Image 1 (cartoon, rainbow, N blue to C red):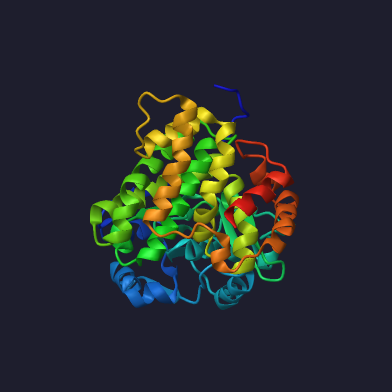
Image 2: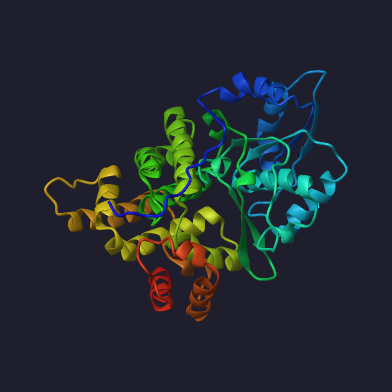
Length: 390
């Protein structure tokens, strides 16, 4: 094994998993924080599905004051978070709960930190400032199986003016508690299940093949790849299958843990211009680009990609590592086809004229991710991937 610079392995202080885990554990955990004034961050879809009422029921009691903010948008822009921050100013929240997908969870993480520091969102998201302390304790309850944001130290928000996604990374954004309950994912529509599931697979695959990968992150990445590959099709086509939903919830969690430790690479880097300019969800952009990036990256770590094929259930017995590695790319494409993930950017109106600009933007703005990619890519390489995906 090649020697690499040691990377700290960090996860939330507490993670609770299992069917019914919110109902059985949330109230006691909140009381453990000695918090009385609670902010619940969510969105209108979660409220409409009844999950917000369920959560409030779990926290019923005369000694708790619950306030709810549900105006978080899908793929939120910086301005959306600024509006949420303005609503929160002047209120003394002693704990913050995020109930939703990655957009809600990122917003809840940032609100806790911003309320403790002051200032504007742009000071920290792609800005000059860094967080210096923790905010109010945070509890994250994901309602999709995709981002793994409940166990990561980064957040992503849309910069409308620049038509890009902006990132903030800080150890102080790590949640204090993540509760993973598949009951809160049962009503996710098939298309969203597909896109978020492929997003989770992207996190696991990129972390597994990353330059910063370690034996610790590999443990989580491998299990995530295995669980997602065997259960995503069922979760998409039979959403109330609780076994598949549990597998996907754990796969997303483990992919998030791997991502938090090893980070990601070119799939994420290339998806930022696409998603920022054409309003694709983060998951949809990653899902579309992943097979094309994997085909190029494969030569950078053939043993790892051969193992990916095995984890995805491909018949690798008797094959060379090179042959097995090629099967991993085929497996990714077939999975996308089976769950009706678009495989071409032109399906969203992308034209070839924008691709050179995107390639240049990636090389100029995504150095952190590109340096973690298993294969060194030039601007020409990036342009070639975009053209293949068009």
